Image 1 (cartoon, helix red, strand yellow):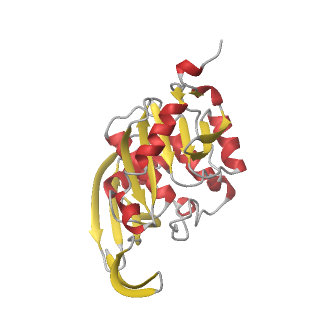
Image 2 (cartoon, helix red, strand yellow):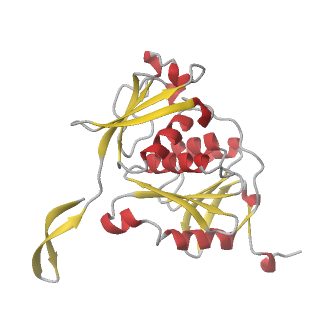
Image 3 (tube, helix red, strand yellow):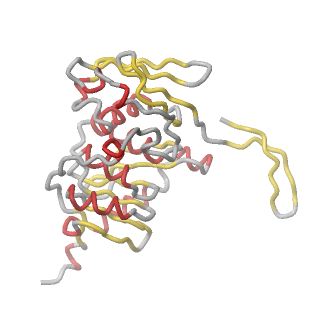
Length: 269
């Protein structure tokens, strides 16, 4: 969308229309019970619903999500999600429901207690080795695969690249957690093997980002900014290779470095 703006450049003022990112309340409603209200960019909502449901543990498999309807309301958007009776989302109790809206920059806003805040997932699989060249290639390609951010400068991206570093999927959102949920949903819809490539996010690697990656079985998570101490500990225990400060020409590997290797011609006996 566009909004009018007075732009000041090099001593001159112009009145123009500027592209701005959309941010609306999105209510996640499971079998008639509201679980959370997230501030999100209203694109790729099918992927968002599936990825959020999986990463929050409301379903264990996409087959448990039976129906999704998007309702545009004056206040925002309601995602009416119907899940099977054996899914956790079908039996929401008050203590599992979030008490506050989830802001675009918040992964656990409204969580009631510490057990819900710190969730330990199962360890990820063995995965495959990724070369540093592949990581560099994915980083370079991602710069041209973010149309919303190119227009607005206000959204995060989460991308999936194969072992060669070719970007296969990109999802954008004002919230970094939402972007990753959208990516996870797209990966599951597309039958992507989460151990056969790497996820790249244009944000810091917080605890919640590692938790969501763990829930999806992602074995390599690379972030453009820094990880937190808790994210590092959780990545270590889950078996995830966590990379931070992913920039052209360099990066830091915080956990399980064996999955990220130099190109074959640079290896030493």
